[in-house]
Every structure is written in C-alpha cells, then in structure tokens.
Length: 242
Image (tube, rainbow, N blue to C red; front, side, top):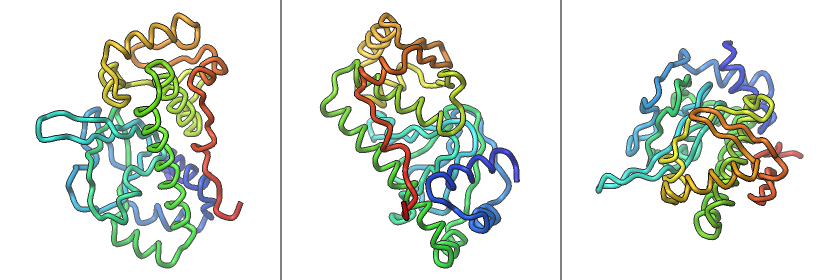
C-alpha cells in the first residue's frame, strides 16, 4: 500500500476504529491511485453517485454553480477526507469538486462499496463518522454566515482549516499549506474581497498570523482561537463505542 493510501486508511482508523481486516478489504477494491492537477474536476455536479472518492494527498474545494454563472464554495477538503460520503444515500452529486492543488485520490466503486457495507459494519461506522464530522463542519459554516462578523468569521475558518491539516499530519510548527486565494475566501465565507483583505490585515497587525501566497503561519494560536471562539471538538470524531 502506498504512503498516500496509508494516510487515508489512518484517517478512517482514527475516526471509526477500522480494524486491519476492514482496512484491507476497503482499499483492496480501490483501483490504482489517480493523480489530478490543480483545477481538475474530481466529481462532476449532477452526476449519479458511482464511487466513493477519497482524497489521499492535496486539497480540494466543493462548489455549487448557478445558472447565472455565480458559484459558492460549500466545502474545503484535506487529504484523508472522503469527498462524497454524504451522497451514498442520495445517489447523486449535487455539487462539483475541484482540486485546489496537485492531488491524488482513489475511487471505490459503488457496487463494491455496497457489498462491503453489507458484510462489514465497521466500514459503515467509519463512513457514518466521516459524514457526521463533515455535517458538523457545515453547521459551523452556517453559523459563521448567519451571525459572525468578518474578522472572527475569517479567524474561525483559518483555525478550522489549520486544525484539520494538523489531523492529516500536515501541520509543521503551526505552518500549513494554504492554496486558497482571497477570492476563494470571499466565496467560502460570504464576504467581499475587500472585507477579506481588511480582516487579514487586522489579524496580521495583531500578530496572530502570517499569510503568504501559499502558506499560512499561525503566530499566536491561543490569540487566534480567542478571536474565533474556536473549539475543535467537532472536528475530532469518536468511535461509536466510546
């Protein structure tokens, strides 16, 4: 098993307590690891659900596009995330997913996944937990959009993304990959680019962060968490039998 596939396995193990035999069964039905360039479409909106897609390296964004050409970023994914676990039930992808960076992923065919779910309840639990964590993330996003002012809204997003990258093993001394542009942040957070820029400048001025074109450095984690009122418990997930 490649290092990238091993990471994806570890993420499912962390959330769902997936036994070794179930790990092997799950990734044993996955085809060869696929590669994607920045901007490539990983899941096409409106297409029938045909496979479970797991991001093994890189980052991706989920986008809802409208008939007038407008679009909204509705989720950001990091390595180890299942990109469409919530669509197993609905059988259709309502949104498109695009690579934010060069990425690798696996697609587990729906028929084989259904067979595994039927006979291996631990895989069902792991996917349920994956869906529950992403539902909690969506709930937090809804609260930002409805109630939070620009600066704490942005601060919360930065805290959440850096924490998720740390869980994925990509937090190097509070420095993480950050491929999102200010336009991306505006789309995700329901803000104008002007407000995004001003909020970033305030957070920088307070000595909380440093943001370059592709890296985010959190200089004062406690201070940033305080501004955001960030509690990462919803990102952790727990085994069903905890």
